[in-house]
Length: 438
Image 1 (cartoon, rainbow, N blue to C red):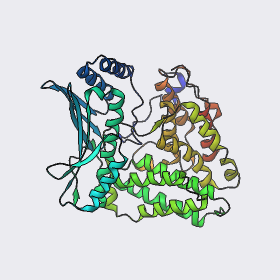
Image 2 (tube, rainbow, N blue to C red):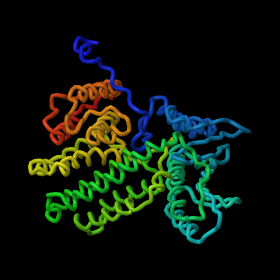
Image 3 (cartoon, rainbow, N blue to C red):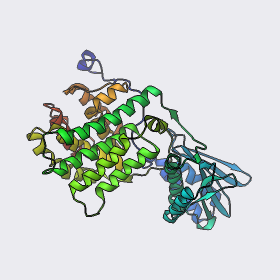
Image 4 (cartoon, helix red, strand yellow):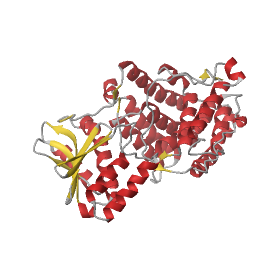
């Protein structure tokens, strides 16, 4: 510890609550995991199928998640893996591999939800929804061993697991005869935390509506500004409240509608997006609470991109911020760096330094929310903690240094004159990072 650190409190960062944010990604593999996948491929090609299965499931294991269990029994490789609230179970032997996950129990068989499952089956490539003898909706995947390469297994099990996890809450919310079954939860969220998240969801949607209806900006003349506002709202609600079930699907639908090639102009799309957010506002509070819980995961659903692509997104979008900032439209100006961070965290699996730095930006932009959750914050009503922010950025760089030895954020580029100026300079700092050498 140097002289100044002794005077100003040392370099240790404040202890923060153990609350998870954002979507799980499985791209951050260890070297031993990557070697296990290569070994699985070699063993499969050499027809050492059971050995290939063991190596494959080791590849999927994440020690922090505790997401995969594998054991030998009766000459077979048995496995369990967790994806959200669902558990996938199965076995592999010298002839075949079988996997399944129970989704929901049907008290009565209704044509409505059975028709929905038939439609879902048409979209699936490897797995299928079925009803077992106990009237439980189950999603199943089978393959002959000789046709079950590690590449196919990864794609098939990911499809099965992610669809099982997504459909349980959605189906139960929509169809009354269906009931919850085999819910696997890593952490039940306390009622106080649920209340904070619910109030944040409602207040942020309403604040966006108020900006549209009562703000100074001529929204008919500048509809793209409102698109930035609504998409930042979508992405931050997804990342910061980490919803399951109906709300998660609603936010994904908002994203899809915003980027759909449907012939609608920006103003028309904004109306569509607003209606989708209104549906969330109209939901009963208890519906939100029922979908708030923390889970383990095995497969990520975001597409990996490199730092160069992240830099391109920053360069393309940040240029649109300047005019709104100069004209005093602070909320819109801040929505653009928020949109950049949110989109990268929602839709992509970005390199770890980018992910951690974007998360920190949201901590600063949404400081009131983080304060309510019990976090130490670096933004007190627009007054930025310069020393604390720089120390936190250095800490992120130090943790990522092993994989990115050339990572050296240029803190001199940061502009602390105002929150919009800081957010803009912070994004440029991220763009200029050197992530080579890993």
